[in-house]
Image 1 (cartoon, rainbow, N blue to C red):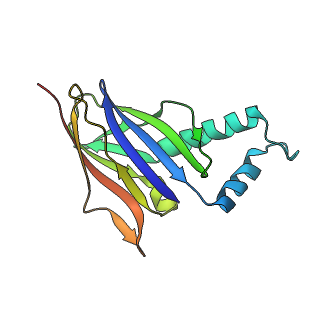
Image 2 (image 1 turned 30 degrees about the horizontal axis):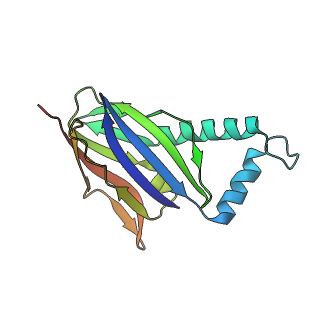
Length: 157
């Protein structure tokens, strides 16, 4: 599973666009799981329920910590499906003034893969984000096994 992470600050929230790209086989297995009544078709309601549940599960695997204080990610939008078998999730966590954070992606431990950190486009009114891989980050056979990032937020005075 390849993942792309894009962080930004909006107001007092850290916003995360989390994209997963899976193989065609994994996408087909997922479609099978969506078909709750096993009629061979995926209704809009089945798709909606599946991705709402998947978004909540994924949000529960994302952890943001500042000096022993944990901030939870919440689902902040609908999942966007792309033709290349990728899915884009949108999450948000209230910062409450936090500036020195550690982000851990528990999903990456379950499904190791390639990680791409996408740079934010600079906005003079937004806080400056500095993101780097933590020494706690684990790799296995060239793939990220556990994503751990250090995030520093410098707010404009």
